[in-house]
Length: 167
Image (cartoon, rainbow, N blue to C red):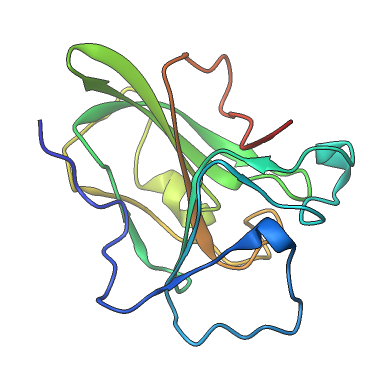
């Protein structure tokens, strides 16, 4: 089974280290960035959604320009889609059920554009590498800088959401 890049990155991109907090004055020198997986990010999640005590990020964030295409990482079936509209949440979100070694795995693609929700529908089969969405701006994506939050789960989500910040 092959796996496609969810966002096609250029040769040069920035990798953030949020373990020491966020510098509000920092201006990234690259239009594409990576936010790491399994990273404690103190002081970053201040919205009510996070209860003031969660800061462990368990997805991969890929910063990209608004409108950047988002690709299915593998063949799959659209599980759910919708808008998680709480401040700090994902905004427009698509979850796709994929398989790895004949085992189901669910991928959340979050912080998308509203238009993304018209690009796929529940039950639709998507091919590896197919454009399924585009990156949204902060007015619709939960209030964040433009990026894709990509997260995998062995557990089937009961709704169009997965906790991306835990503990």
